[in-house]
Length: 362
Ligand SMILES: [Zn+2]
Ligand SMILES: [Zn+2]
Image (cartoon, rainbow, N blue to C red):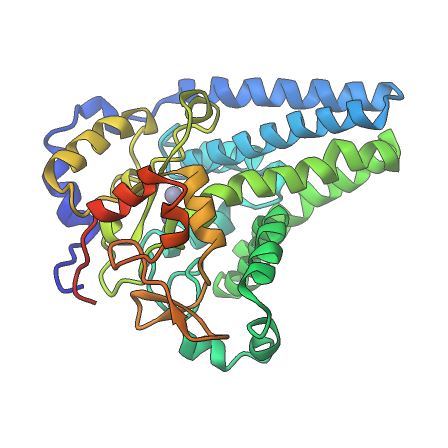
């Protein structure tokens, strides 16, 4: 990995090819959020006012979970400043959009904008990066968890996607809250507690059984949807000493309707190059990247990225390899001979995606 470039190196070359309006805030993106909000309030009211069969309630939960996730994607965009510029309004709208996921805007900007984006896939400084073999060897749980066969670990890893965003958000809360001054700390506590108070109060309004389907199950579904993206954004890529989005990020592809519902969140490499850009323009950025650096760019259908995630361990060795500590089998990573033989039998497209990215020196 001796030919890495920072995101600003790519951005400087791409920016002149993009229309200036791509960098202007677009308040009309809020109509999508308003639609999700109206559906959420309507469905929760329906659940509270009626006595539905559990199967009907489950359908409502799926609708609500999809709305919570959609609002989360919009919240991410709002807090990057692509919707409104005024800081107080940005934070207020971001807080509303992240309300179902109970993540406050101040914590999110610190965790995501100032750390994940700045230090992407840095071994120590990216709060979202997976650990190296050296680091995990010092953890007490290490021996027990990594003594289990890979498919059992993968099963539990996938099951945990239903709680992973909430759990990681809580971990980030305790990681970063102490770095703020007293007043900000109070704000951050309030931004976390108020959503929880509101959701728990709902139990007394609609009853516990209804609440399970109106909030808890939708929260698990929303966790799974957002984590399906977050877990594939970087976890098949190498750790990189330079924050090079083409090396350390993966753009997944999803059906067009899903991109509309999720505000183009699938374009993650493009997002890391231009986090402040209106995501409507990411397909144009993608065209330019593929024309200029086709051998560096990583792109994969979401389903195949998830299969690849299932079939690989989540521990890094020498930054460019994923290694199974149980049997020391190594799997490479995207751009570094990611070993997906068992998948490529089922997927010629993935095979092509892997072959398109020849090995770089590690
Ligand atoms: Zn990212
Ligand atoms: Zn972001």
